[in-house]
Length: 378
Image (cartoon, rainbow, N blue to C red):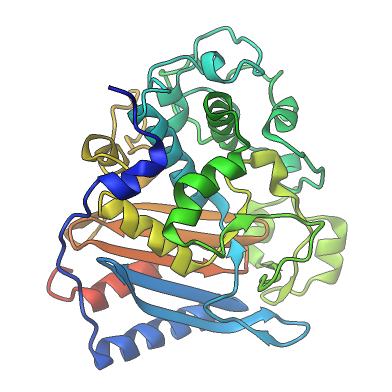
């Protein structure tokens, strides 16, 4: 039987039938109040939240300023740096190619990305998806990168000569570059650039019209400006990243413009813009079985075997528990913004939270949102 093209899952796999949550007026007010309070407490310029269930966006709430300097308000159409939430889409693209018979999860990366130099140990696709490949993590120069990389192949030069940190499968190290290698594998088996693969298989079929690659050299509509907030705590914990100019010119606890950072070196890992509504559409499509067959979709929900002393995780996500409900989630944050996506398979819910400040981890806000949506479960 001829393998199916990945995009055909949208047409050939029937959507699972799920009861859709309905929000009361009081729940909507409570959600809005919780989000507004969180923004005030964290001093973030702008926040945007979307919640979906079944096939619908149930709630969208944007507050604050997308651009402080010009007093531009944030709206549901405002785009933010997607950060590591892109990894869940890259993982889904890889699993689509597994379903189509083009990629073997236990196949060696050089089989699909021959541009990557041979290493001392074999690295498999599965290793990379689970951050078990030993590929190095991002460092200080990566965090503040200003070099433009026009392609995945070009970005390999940034880490291809670095030795592995451990034998693949024996440890775990969160690696953006591991996902760059997965983007390279996708290009190798499809013959198309990563952006085209993502657009054909996920963005266009799901109507994710606001999701696109970051490009510092083009005017991009509805873009939230990025800001930093330097606190006493992060001045100490991030010593070495703050420059003399930061320390001299930036007041504590007040948002100021972030340095321009070019994420083109991490294609496949965190180089996109999106809106919470777009990311909710992606999660709902996963939940409904529209993007992957169930056997592969479960790999993004169930923690996979992990080396001793490390925390098991599903492919492309992490798992955590809020009250009595386990979710898959990705909290992505970097120098230029923060984004979080949460997938609650028990209640068939999707939540996305975006902001234009650095290193926000909205655990408390997600917990509050879930308690409002399902008070009897939390």
